Length: 268
Figure 1 (cartoon, one colour):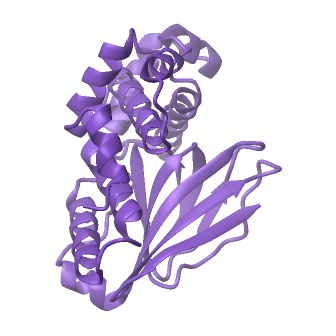
Figure 2 (cartoon, rainbow, N blue to C red; figure 1 turned 45 degrees about the vertical axis):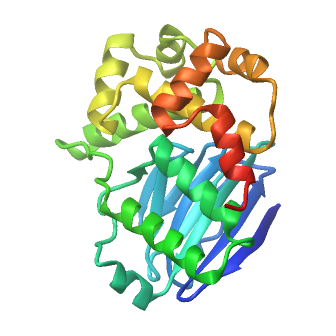
């Protein structure tokens, strides 16, 4: 089941929320967006095929598709994945003075995760000028960011390395608070050393850094939804305690959980 909820239609851009709950792990029928589409994952992990390239999509990345690029999605059965999609016209893109991302997904840091949530939260409450400026700034920042590195070497080897890193991302994005390094390596059929080295070469970050970012994004989603029990949330996500959660969120997003709750709830 796929539910698309329009959030705002602006001058040269639109914003929508997409929620999908799949019954089977199969690829959706290919679609071509009406414009240039920048997709942020709010919750979940799935595989996306964009312009012939397959990637693992989770809250730590955004991915871009042009108006001539087919997109197809494969979701995990029984889980709900939600995204925010920013659709931009040709003139809007041209006026950004930025090139489209080349070579893969773009990393979404904590501050970018906050920015796309603020845009979605305020789009219906702020005047069109402010919403347009937020959309321009968000798109410009993402399109200016470097893409995740691509593996070099023989095609078969590069594909195996991408698959290993993608498998690790799917496991950690699904169970960031419970799986240890050796657990992940065993499930993927390799040594922890090989997994760690390959993951860093493929993504540009360590497994530890990725896991921390995933947990922060999951915490951010819960905070925006109104979760007040931060001690319980910390335990669920594998943080040592409430203070550890607060410190990690502040380091990644630049604000404490309490400040983020106020930011995402308030109209100003």
